[in-house]
View: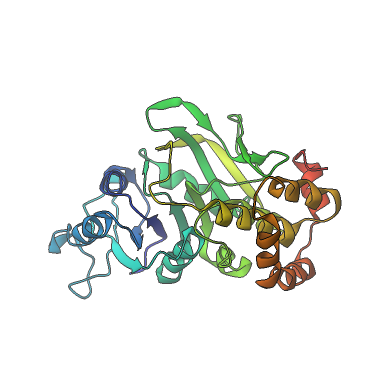
Length: 319
């Protein structure tokens, strides 16, 4: 039996949190069938061993009918706590955040994909709320509130953009509402829509802007993104990445995102963020040499909304 939801957890150097995240998912009450897919992306710590240990954590009697190794699907009765069903584990070689998510999506069997960071903690009913929003037909992709793991009163509900392309968190709405950006900490989207929009941009490097680029592409191609005040996922906000993110790669991603979707003063405003980078000219040359202009042309052909519409609709400071 295929699950309704596939929860995809990209994990790189997550030894301190991966097991806690998986066990948090296991412990949350739900009325939704799901599987967990861990994409271990070239970690240099003990994350691979932890992931493999989790992959053998379930007792044989807790597996769905099928081969001894799977399929690993939790079948709930009403709103119960999930048994410790082992996640599927995929090992990749440091391919980056966007590609790791795509690899997990390719292996997923669920009708709905839920992408989560490997350092989050969930509450009872979190999955049911996200699934219900997508079932309603009002939204094509949604996110919960994202709170600091130790301060649930500090929560953001979707994101917006600053004039330099940095994110800013939005306040709690009274009801589900549209937001320009869904944070990569937790995103739910139907697998069909995810395939139609082309997944996350495989051309992005290491980490940075994968959720922003994807959200913008979703809006411009006609989809609807929303958040809900009714559930919150707790997230570990770290002072530093657990692996190196070269500034070159970060700003490369900013330039690729901007050139893929924006024009005129909006593009100029975003590219201004590169002005202080010592290798900005080499960086731009690399972005342009990697097929970004060709990608831009293809995206402009299929989009049904303009970047000016996006900026005006959500009052983004990019004019």
